[in-house]
Structure formats: C-alpha cells, structure tokens
Length: 428
Image (tube, rainbow, N blue to C red):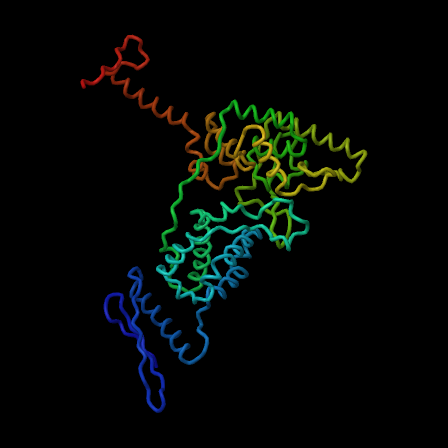
C-alpha cells in the first residue's frame, strides 16, 4: 500500500514497499509541485505519481498515455470532428516533423513547464526543413537546377513564427487532455513563447495601385486576370477565388457569394470545402465595372464553348484552365508573383492583394465594420489590429478635433492664420 506525505509548502513525498527476498523495503520519492496548483490539485498529482510508480515497479504499463499515444487519440477523436482536413494535415506535419521525434515517448505528466521550455529553447536553434517532396516521390522529374531549399535558407535557425506554431500545437493538444481529466493543468500555458516583430501588411500608394490594375487588365490572360482582380477589388483569398463559379454572381444585385474554398492536402489532393471561418461566408458587393468584366468573361467562355462544348456545362468556373477545368490551387499565386516582380512590384504576393484592398478602403475612410465584412474577418478588432497603420487619415482627424477644442478657448491663434508670428527659437 503506497503512502502520500505532505511535507511542506509545495513539497510532497510518495512511497511504496517492494519485496526484496523475504523482506519488504520502502521506496520513497520526493516531489516538488508547481506553486500555482492548489493543495487539492497537488495531492491529486501526487496520487497519479504514486500510481505510475507502483505500475512501474509491478511491471505493468502506466495508465497515463505518452504524448505519441495521446496525439493520435486527439487527432482522431477530438480534432478531426470539427477541424478542416487542412488543419488536421498541418497539425500532423508539426507532430511528425519535430514534436513526436523529441517528446513522443514521454508520458503526458512528464511534460512539465520546465521540460517544455528547454525543448523550445533547443528547437529555436534547429535549422529549417523543406516541406517539398524528395525526388523519388515526385510524379514528374524536377526541373534542372531546382532545389528543395537553398543552402543559405537551410542554414538559418527556425523563425519565431515557426517555433510559435510548434508550441501552439502542443498547447492545443494538451488543452484537450486537461478537458477530459488526464492533466490537472496545461503545462504549455506556462511556457513563454518566442517574441516576434509583427510585419507590416504590404500596401501600395494609390497611383501604384492604379498602375498595377492597368497592367493586369491589359497584359494578363483572362482567367488569371479575373483571379487577381477578384483578390484586389473584392478581398478574396486564393482558395476562395479558385472555388468561384459564375452562378456565385447575382447579376441583378451586383454581388458575389463567397461560401466555398478550394483546398489541398497531400492525402486528399484538391477539393472544395467550407471557407476558412464562419465569417468567411459572406456576400460582397462588386464594383460595377467588375460586374461588367465578369459578364464579358462569361460570354467569352460561352462563345469559345461552341468550338469546345466540354468547356461550358451551364455553369463554369470563373478562374479555369485552358479547357474550362478547375484551376490548380496555386497557379494564380505562382503566376502573379512572377508577374509582379517582372513589372517592378517586387515582393508583392497574391495574398498581399487582400492587404492592398483593406488599406485602400481604410485610407478612404470606409468604416471599419464594412472593411471587416469584406475581408471575412470574425470581428472588426481583427481588422483594426492588422491595419491600424493604414489609417493615418483617422489620426489626423483626431488631431484636428483636439485642435478645435484648443482654439475654442480663444487663447490660441490658429496655426494657419497668416498674421500669427512664428514660434520664437529657444535661447541657446
């Protein structure tokens, strides 16, 4: 029969007897508990430690699962019921890449904040990996000179964002273990994640936006032109663009319905599924000129279908391949990156067009709620955090309001008054 002793503040000791020959000997192990736990929680933790000690001594497996065992239970019974296949695939990659090889054989109760902190510290020093398939797994040979990852990039340590993703995976997985009672608390909640500087969202001055639109309209092929215009003028994500059909357009109201997205996982291939979030399901008012562009593109497709009947089946993908088939998910993104670089817009990505869209609207004083709806954000605060830098005009409005209050006192001469003397320079 084992014993549990409370020996002082956050200090406990467990003990049990084992038979050595004809005699019984005590084995006692001191425990230091997390000060943040209540006394009752510390006692329950000591009880679990005692059960695992007795199980080890008896040669029977412990009831507490390892991280590897729990990860599969979590993925299949807790996560996959509600998460999208893309989310599940991303978590599987994080687990198989660095988490399970390093922590997978540890029981959940061994994942203390101190151990996870050490793991994260060492993780930050590891070099990067390529997620691209090796040559022997490719369906077609790789182009000559194409590298999985450049030597310079491979030598860099993991970025703060990537380290946060790994820690976030463990945190989410252990939170489910807490909910069903396997753990008293989530040790990952007490691990300080790496800090990273938030990159500013890409934006363009209005003249450059107009120049880019002109280049797209005059030089891009029709399907890719439509993809870029929908992203830039309607703030659509890449997957949302790939899932659009002409039936998504309400020609009378001048709106387009976004309720599907083109997604991809290595296991499932490309497929149409729900949008990223519930807020992603939205109806967006199209610019009237964009309605005309879409209408003309649809009739062009219908006319071409007279020669290629399979290209038009009563409803067609808006962004499609040469023969009307659904476009590869990454084709618009890869094409636009090369197009932008070639025309002096280095570094601007397809996803960056969404940020250009939001920045333009905010700079022209479109209200935050309307911008948030067009972006498909779950809350206007998400939009505000992401695009506060794109609202300098609002800050100028705030300064003007305070200036009016100051001038109302009658004690200050307006700065624009030509009769006002310039401020005197301070004495040296």
